[in-house]
Amino acid sequence: MGKGKLAKFAEMAQNPLVVECPFSVMQEGHFQLRGHWHEDFFHNDNPIVLELGCGRGEYTVGLGRKHPDQNFIGVDIKGARMWTGAQEALHEGMRNVGFLRTNIEFIQEFFAPGEVSEIWLTFSDPQMKKATKRLSSTFFLNRYRQFLQDDGLIHLKTDSNFLFTYTEELLRTNNLPTEASTRNLYAAGQPRTIHEQLAASIQTYYESMWQARGIDIKYLCFKLPQEVYLAEPDVEIPLDEYRSYSREKRSSKSVGR
Image (cartoon, rainbow, N blue to C red; front, side):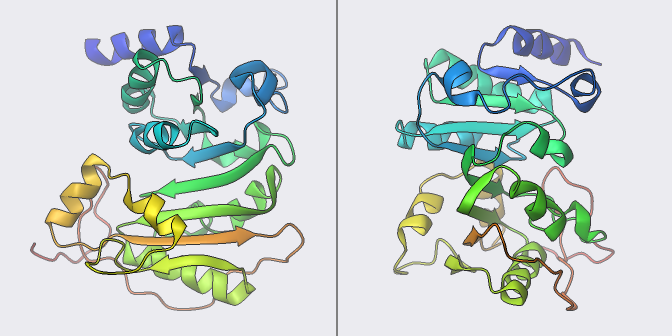
């Protein structure tokens, strides 16, 4: 491990906005903040919103700036990336932003029923080979329902046509209420819902690079009811045909851009 990463990990350990709890640590006992994020971490009763797979934390921090009346938690296992947003939020004195470093596969262990009001999935890996690894799959939606409020909102913002189409089909298969849906969030002259306006108001570094390559940014917002049985869509979806920044090659094909 490079000295730069070691220094970042040391700063993360001292940052009061960061909670580090890999699954190996969580196995040692009950996660103490579960059910107590409001009083013990944020010290307020404002709604809690998660960004799962937050990367550098650009969206978490951006949302926190725009909505001081809400609490935002960025979740990722990559501590060296998360360091950027965590340091930025600390230096700005933000009290409504936090970061949880852990495995998202076990996210239901960190929040109590009804403790979270919304979830953002921003540029998640589409995981084209295995549905259960997709953050918008029924595998994960059933986990989210263990702590998300009834009819809580899930936002999906992605460059991936595969992931967007898969999630669209999942919503159609299960008749889940859709609040917003667009295959080109930044199309000129397009009327936007309130949710689309918020999604378009924050742009990450890699998002701007995708746009420069001519890749449209897609956005979905839907409600997740507690009592609906969820089934996987039975459809064939074309694979993405390009390499995405900081990810492995998505398919055997390549498109010059």
